[in-house]
Image (cartoon, helix red, strand yellow):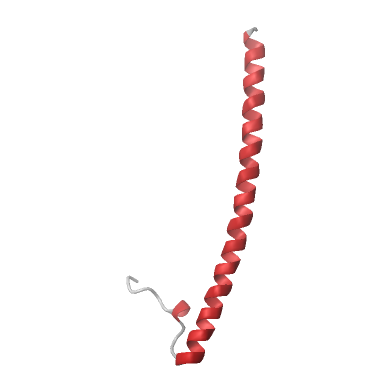
Length: 67
């Protein structure tokens, strides 16, 4: 096997690996987007619940103590 053939095989393997990693990243981004939306909804619900039960400033609107 000559050097050109070896390089072509390496390029083919690397190209496949890049495509597979790209698919993984795309799936992970979709999952991150879904989870971000869910967390935002949960924070809104909790803020509403806190406001309805105590009338205080919702926790979601308060700055953490280290700010």
